[in-house]
Amino acid sequence: MDKETLDDVIVRLDRLEKIVGEINEKLSSTMDELMSDISKNCNISDEKTESNIKDNKDENIGVKIIEEILGRMGYPPDFDPGTIEELRESMRQSGIRAEDNEFSRAIIEEREK
Image 1 (cartoon, rainbow, N blue to C red):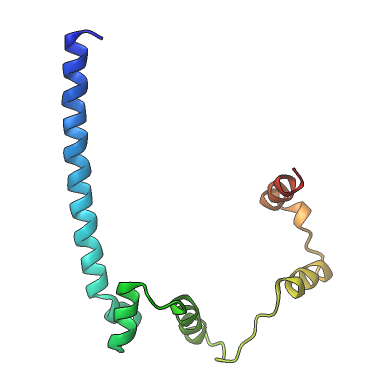
Image 2 (cartoon, rainbow, N blue to C red):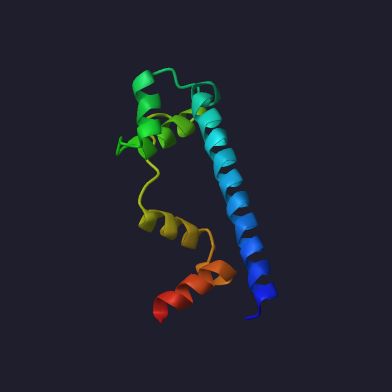
């Protein structure tokens, strides 16, 4: 590689490193803003819940969030969506075939390999 090309590569790498650093800073500040506004956006008033979201230590946080979303959608707290087998059977009885869906066909083909 000649000297000019090597110098060009070095300049481009320096610019890329600078841009990546700026993007990381912007992403960090955006995440900080989002986390500070989380109680307003999600109507979370419990400090423990907000702390668990930030620390990501609560193993059931996903379940709690889904329950809250379902509650907002009008589903009762004791709503049971059923098993995947029941869903598949219901879909089959309704005439929905996974083989008719392009994405499902790809999954089925990969599973059979």
